Length: 474
Image (cartoon, rainbow, N blue to C red; front, side):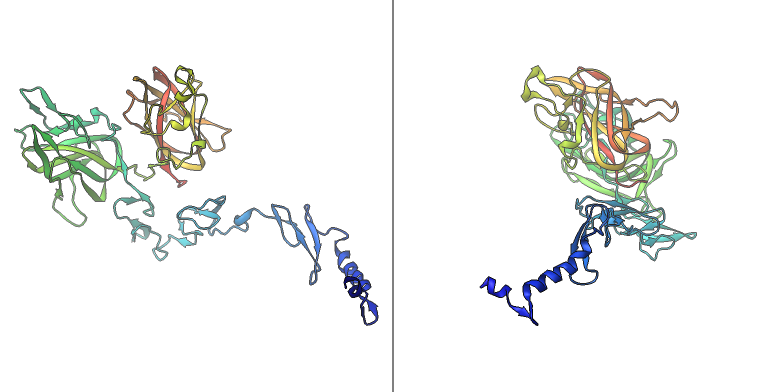
């Protein structure tokens, strides 16, 4: 059957001869490869009578144009910088690229101008207002930033010890059981445990207060309060005011926007429950005072403060939450307790508050040449670091001082400098195995790689940490 079909004629011309002629006509276009840069020429019916299969990185009809993926041509308007997302899908990004906008522009493609409020530049419920011809976003708490793009909700360190005892003071202190129990302000930490576990004002103090010195100007968006139990009886603050100061001398009592009277916050209703109050608008201050108004039995308090750096760029970057995977946490060496593999202190154990028998990174040697590194995969704005020590079979170990190096490419490194001395800055580290120690970088750094360089330590170089910052370049 197949042979008979091949011998059929078309207008007297055998079909096999006709097919050879057609193939010859179309095949001649690819006898000389018309495709550039290693492209493969393939014939076809139509116009043009061929097409090119281009290698990666090239395009066009003859593979004569260079392609760089979804960023060519640049989809970003007004000078925006296009960045390929490498196929990684984020919750807020559904394309293969993101646009980094120039100052004054906003939107997925930087198409919205901030020259006025018509482009609705404010996010998260922010309201755009033009004052003296300059537009700006009025942000609902706890959102902050030029476009209300940041959530200012970091816990500032009362509970975990990031705020030191020396930063907490009070108008008076209650001494119980013949003066043997001191209910001092340094105990006013959320969820503090023990028989004496909170601050209580003296019974004679008619205008009590407790104050936290944050040591620099911060943006405060809220407070979490809690009472305590003394001699089996619940004590707590039912209502309170909040005063703030930039210098520790002149204080202002918090008022709601548009009101002329002091705001009274609702406090607790029992000794152990937690009550959260937001500051809307946020408070800009270095010193924050709690002024009890109504107390149950005694003015007793445990608390945590909520806020962030002034620019809002102080979110945890993912070491503790596992957002940064194990493969991006590396170190110069690792230590094995008694040389046993099961007791290896790997770099990917160095996550803040990690639990377990081996729950931190420990270097193989006590040397200033050791280092611990975090790879953020892409450059980010980094504003600070939280460090923590650990225990090895009951032995307390920690890094008591360190330097910080950073890089955008992993090849060229810089060390954070002290802005006054212009020498490498030595950051104060931990003084025990469990307390958080928070250090901020002023100014912030822009980096993909961050290295902690231990300078001094107790027992062995041992570290758990979290980085603070944001994705924004500015």
